[in-house]
View: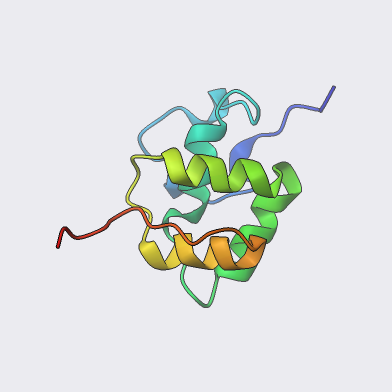
Length: 97
């Protein structure tokens, strides 16, 4: 059994501004934590941000929950994740033709 992790000891508190982050469980709340952890990432911080996630989650979990999220994760982040894990590129937002 994994020890309880306080998510704001790993990720910035402001990412979880709208919820009681002390109640987040790293296993039960993957669908919230994974996208939020990459919400504010930039090309300069992506490597550090993704490495924090990789300490807690598998690459397949990261990809799965980014594909499913309703959070405003940029297409650039999604493409960077796909490239990192050598999976088919995916995007959150696609403009209709």
